[in-house]
Length: 337
Length: 213
Image (tube, rainbow over all chains, first blue to last red; front, top):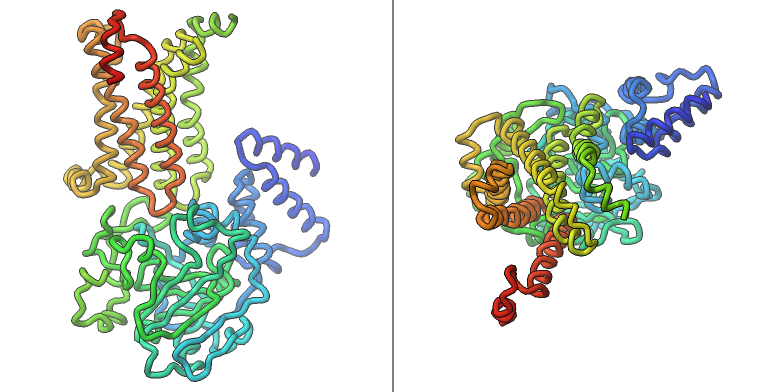
């Protein structure tokens, strides 16, 4: 066993891969063996278990090893089947948890998976305030009990023209909204992510201003498709995917689905949003998925589904037009991009 | 000086050649071992683009290094390094044309016309093509040294266009494009500095005064 570890380490180093990642993986493997008799299938979600088997065959991959350890630590999250699920094949968990945009932890796609381990997700509280009758500071457990957790398989389309299919776990955002009883003044909902300069990128490094903020119009936020999300693939969210609580707005570009939420505020005016502040010409407040309105620098007519070689046509509202098109009746979506 | 002698050895071109191939071999190895991440096509596009810019910077560093280190022998490797910049540029362009546009040339033409960052990249790549074509000794003779040299200053255009292409591509984090930009500016700045210090070729002193004015 020791010889194998040395061999792995040497081969990893030879290939320019951080050998610690592999050794760590291997150690863990040995520990499991030593404890003896517990099959992987009993302690690890099945997809992750199968993936781990695959990694044993192709061990020297830093990202894979990292994922292995993360899947190991992840807690299961039970949920009932929810409505609006796509019957498309979910993107592998490994891809969804190693290919992320989470600029607080790095601007490269692989960086959040490497750096988001520093995020402390417990204890976690969410301040809900503004134009509501019952403002409240929720702790995470309280929020999670507001409504039954559902699994919903949604398409997720990034503004960068790639897409994934993810089995999210959460409940409609409107359950939380109803709990705090918005007043007539509440026309928009503003969201804010956690920001801690001690272990996150600075504004200058990322090129956008933090904390990350997003917003929805009240009717968008109340729409049953808009999900307050706590998990994916049967387990709690990995940090890099926005743990412990994020938004999922499947008919809008991914950056609208704000991660690691600490504050929700009900306001009467359109709130500022991070990418719009960074570049208003390229990122609008609405940012609905729209194949007919190009990003100034690239076409939005098609997208690359991760894991596929060719490109697919992008669907209006990411294929959720039947549910949400009426929200925008009479609006010029060219102007309100 | 042993290094000087080493650099003049015929066989020295072989290890340099092999070294220049390492990035593409590594990419191939990763492709065969699922090492390209969740979006392999993007990974390949970025890797080949990165290496094009790196090789442009390396080839632009040859002349400054010859002056600074007093190693005129480095000239022997310049053509090979330049051709490798073009080689990685070709891979980058092919990736775009094949895996992004699927050889739809009218789509590509639209892209080049509509999207400034593609226009820049295309310009940078196109500027390299005549240099690769005229890289042989025969072409130097046919064009004449002076004209050949003038033509090959297109590499400055290529490197600058490459940096702007990268800068315009990124969404918000401009640290890496700025780093490439700073390196290219330094390498071009050294040339201006060297030209100012040294009287123009042929020893016409007046030329120096004219430049300084």
